[in-house]
Amino acid sequence: MVVERIVSLIREITSKANTVTKMDSEREFSIFSQSAGIHYVVSELEQLVSLPLRIRQIQYQSAINDENDREKFNLDYCISDVISSATNVLSVQIGDDESKKWGGGLYQKISMILAGRGPVGLFSGENAISRITFEDNNTQSVENLEFRFPLGWTKIAERRMRHGESRTFLEGFEVMQTNSTNYDKLLTSLQVLKQNTVLHGGDKFHHIFAWSDRPIAEFQKSLVDNVVKSYVRNAGHNQHNSKLFLFISTNSDTTKSRKEFTEREKIALKRCFQDGVIYFAPGKSEKVFRDDIMKLSRPDSIFDDRSFVTNVDERITTLGLKNQRLMSALQEAIHEGVSDLNQLSAIVISSDCWTGTWSESKEIDGEQVMS
Image (cartoon, rainbow, N blue to C red; front, top):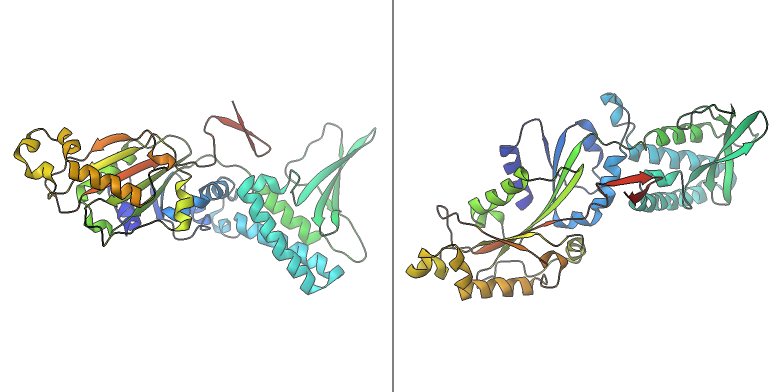
């Protein structure tokens, strides 16, 4: 598998202090709270679809420093606890079945908020699940903590402060005492959730996505090594960097090669930028290695090998890549490894991908503002 090969290679060439992870699940975000530093995260192409959501989850992962508490207080746990607490409150009013049905809908709504604005959107904006409203008088201010239940906003707690006094997160709130409803557990779960939506920026992540139309072992080993090592040596310096590698065979006989991308992979490709790199790696059966005159003028003579160039063009067209944005303004690179030549001719397309972040921007209430 191409992902396993890249993981193995990065582990060989980078410091042991770095973390190299094969991402099996699109929601396996909490694993990154277990270590700090530089992370290389390698995934199949289709997972590129949800990269912005992955990054939002990583950015707002647990603020708890105690390693024993990290699993307990990761974002997924906190959200589930809020939903459970709210469902228990509602069950007193409308029954267990209806409250559980509403809880399922709330989970879907929260997932959409996380994908769009990140966890900060849970407490602000028109789709927020909880908010703080304000009242003021001459001597003190009153802040009301409200939760959005099916029939609208409900006040569940309040805190009173003298003018000029400030509090962090949701500390200092006292639940509203009623005869029929107990908001204590809901308030506690909201306080923990709010604490765990603090933005973190210490670690650096390299999100690598890979796809190959044949088993990666059939491609020239030095080609795979060169492509991956080139990325590691020249990797970006932003907190989140993303790169796609497409390993594509170009021999005229492609009966063993994949003929198309899946629908999800086609969507993933739309996250790729232009100005990437295309590596050309003709196999030993190509004319450029058999013709004595062309041998003398390598590597430039590769582009005079009409058969090789035609096969490359036809393969790109067959896979539906011709009009994709990642094919625009590609820089050309020729792989010159000859000691391990094999029969398979290939190209590798390397492209940066959209991460859903802006490295030079400021974030205000979860919205990106270009500076």
